[in-house]
Image (cartoon, rainbow, N blue to C red; front, side, top):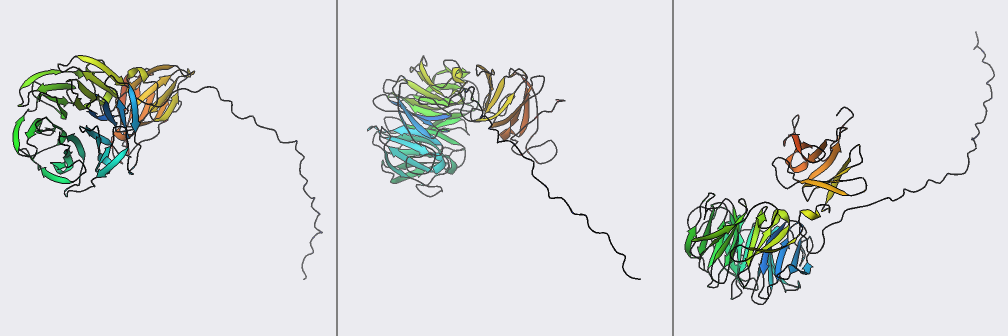
Length: 432
């Protein structure tokens, strides 16, 4: 039997294109409004070091902005130099500072493991140092001082020692080792030199001040852990006036303590806060030729100036009245009323604005405590106007009211359920 015949295929129609009209132009987005500004001249983001020249000019190292700023003794901005990097004249965490009798500025460039030297106007002159433990090398530069002969003393905290150099960076000597005995250090911080060439070092780990000759011979020590007169919780900066009096910044207790050159307690001032004569994480201190005391108030991003007895004189820098400005905005959320919440990761804060950009409030601060942040990123708002923040470096989510009152938090560092490794984003669904 032969194959079964098939029918003749039906012809298929050729598809035709449906005509369309001419392309419709889409209007570009219309700009409506902008607000906020970055920090400018005379403002700081994590200032650390301070130094004063013989003319009374004040130099401040700004760690986050990688710059040095120069001011008059009353805070009038004069100049600034530097940027982030490792080339000559650039910085990675400019820390302590010192100025010699010629007005030349020395900067402890901690992140680059070196000391850089500049003219008083910021012209680069020379540099020395590298990472390591050999002579002329550094691990964690935490303090810097210059004596009347131009010799430079560097607090090399990571190597538990002080190194001495000529003004051009020639290695001259060193002393110190890890420990709690005389001539040893647990956590070396600031360093200062008096008119006789004696060297004072703040040892924050041992809660004391140590005094040496300019060749490293041990002379005296004072201080202990505590809250009373002459005691410390975290001594960091140290400065000396023309009479040999020693000023110590106790960062944790937010105060300045003044001593004789032999360690006898004289007076103290300061407390935690943002008002005059108050501090948040103060670090550097310097004294001018008239005995005025300059303190770097790191947490408030400002410099405060006092008389030798602690009377408040003037301040400058960025304070709470400027919190509507941004340092490094990173996340944003909007509530049902159109209010805008912006996370500012380098300011460690949340800033709230109306829908038209009017600044309403801000909250936060650097730390791991309740209501504090370390690099906050994502922000979300639920229908109750409760604000959720991805607190990246604290590995947690923090919950607030719309006005910044703390409500709750959860999370910790890790990879199991309920833990985070650098949380960046956060979102809230319709059920909250």
